[in-house]
Length: 219
Image 1 (tube, rainbow, N blue to C red):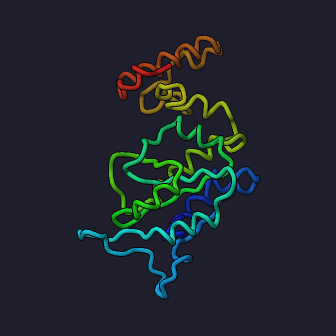
Image 2 (cartoon, rainbow, N blue to C red):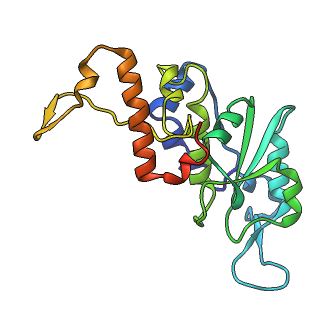
């Protein structure tokens, strides 16, 4: 649900998400609440009761837009800085749903009476953006890559940062020596046990250095 559907296509149709659509692994669409406005100018906002700056999204156009696509099993999510913090666990949970409806807010927010139409409210961080389109794209990308077959190697997602509660271990590629800096010797040992152990220790070290708060709840 967005007032600016043109913002979404460049991201949703590119790279991994674009390939996933061609493979039939996911599909997406955009619905504009303006198409459900009874105003001749397709107005979807009005001044807030009680006064104050800015405008508020009206309930009816948004409710009708949601109803036009909502079906049995749909999960309707409102993108808002006031919502539950979005993380890897939430992405995994949403990836199990068959149909997500991501509602992008604008202006000073939405009429409070529409809130009962949402199953949950999600935030990508403690800051305010000009609209919900960028958060919706973040959620869509994080969720889509959890779907089976979207990533070429399923184990890649399982070993990434936050999947285990730790940050990912350091990665290296050619050349073996770059500007005098060498790749750790253990990675050339061929000993999968030693490599796995080095990666576990390196992941904990990176987490302790960059995000020590994660160690308290890591697996």
